[in-house]
Length: 478
Image 1 (tube, one colour):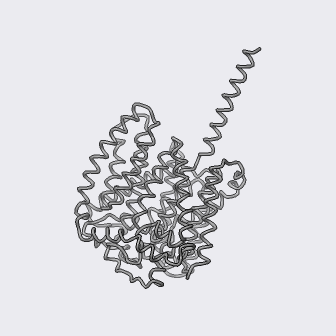
Image 2 (cartoon, one colour):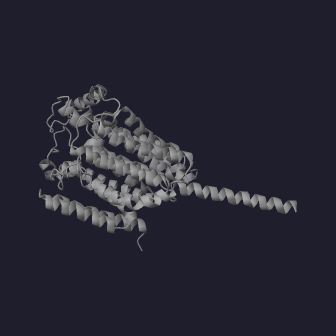
Image 3 (cartoon, one colour):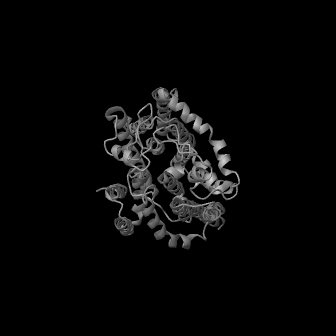
């Protein structure tokens, strides 16, 4: 009999593929668009609540709406937003009922989330101008933040199924990336569609970079790096040892290399090292042996990966990409001038730079970086929401990482959050690729799942021990 996790993962994959097929097939007729959106919402409402986060993850990884030739109303809208919205709506009532029974740390985290939820519309109110994308960005951020609030209140999100889904989808797409780069030298599934999108994604890099089903190579490497860290944790935490169990780690590592991304290598290394250091509480001899194997494999892999991407590091295109990112502080300061408090509006940094600062759009096929973009998700957040908004935004993952690293069962997910936090710092992840923002927030929520239940179990065990001691003392005294 199949396990619940396997059934949830299978259902997620089928639903996501069906949604993707319909999304690609639609035309520009508004009636068909409304019918599609209504159908997606209805289907999500009928599905079991526990399956919705996994469906959102798969849909976010397999349907890059910003890179497909869709009607303009759907371009950039993360498909995973629909199932997560339904999950939040179904979960809020029980979360409200549980919210009073929380410790001081949980109240601080929920307060930070509420503060950012209130700051987003305030930023929009004082924005110089807004477009429809501001609404899409705000909706994505609000749903993700509400997911964190609901889980912090004690409502489970199903972390086991969600992590399993992330592991397997990253492994599958990493395998695809390996075939695409070193065997096929083209994307046979979405390659022609990427070229027909409103902002075409074309292979103009000096080295071929895998795009798989996720679009831009930097989006791919973000998820591959997360998958590598989660598979690393899976390998270390197994009760029995087998060399074959190292294969998923190696495949995800090859997927990272297939994107030819420097940041991907750095994010993978940071996340894996964070996990290996903080999982030291796994004191079994088998776990220690597997950690030593991973250290050796990681060192060899880092050398081979550096050699593999060396041609891009020394190329003119690679140097241009580095220059664009080195100029991020200056671009951020220029865009923030006069808007330090409330920013230029949620998700509006690129559009503000084009329309208000007169920044010219660089042709998309010159892949060193787009002049309208600030190639740093956090810098874009600062420009969009202002410096106070960025400070509150930083406070949320900082608290979640700290809390997850204190619990052995949550170290792997906490390390995955660290990995993703590093990866998104090198490109316009939160504005150009909203599915990355959504998954980042959902992953942070997963790092909290089960925390309160674990604390209650600990309190119950402590109470039972105190009761046993008291009974023994009374008997001895009698």
